[in-house]
Length: 205
Image (cartoon, rainbow, N blue to C red; front, side, top):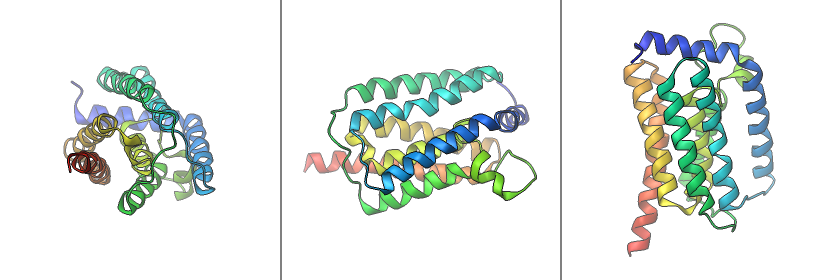
C-alpha cells in the first residue's frame, strides 16, 4: 500500500492537473443547487442514480494516477449506488428533517470549496477549482450532502452504504493522512448514518 506521503502527492497532483474537470463539476453543482433553490425536487430514482457519477469520476482519476485501491473502491460503490438507485421509485424525494437540510447544505458547500491540495494562490480558486469530483473526500462531502437533502432517497441501504464509505475516507484522511479538515466528512457521514437509523426506528414503531 502507498505511504501517506505518496497518497498525498497523488491527490495533490490530481487536484492541480485536472482543474478543467473540477471547473466542470463546479458548474454542474451550481446548476443543481440553483434548480433546488427554485423548487425542483428530483425523483428518488433519478437523484440516486445521478449521485453515482461523481464516484465514477473519482474512480477513473484514481486509476489514471496510480491509486488502484481508490479506483476499485469507488467503482464498486458507484455500481452499488446504481443498483440501489434503480430500485428506487419514481416519486419525488421526501423532505428531510431540518437538521439534515442544514448539515446537507453545509457539506455541499464544504465539498465545493474544499481548502486543500491546491497549494498557494488566490482564495477565489477554491470557488471554481477545488477538487470536488476529483478526489475522495470533497466528492463524498457534496455527495453525502445531496443525499441528506434528499432524505437518503428513502433507502436505508443507500444511506448506510454511502455513509459508511464517507466515514471510512473521513477517518482515513483525518488520522492517516493528517488532513484534519476531513473531520467535517466524518461528522457528515455520521449524520447520514443517523438519518438512516432514524428511518428504521420510525418503521419499527
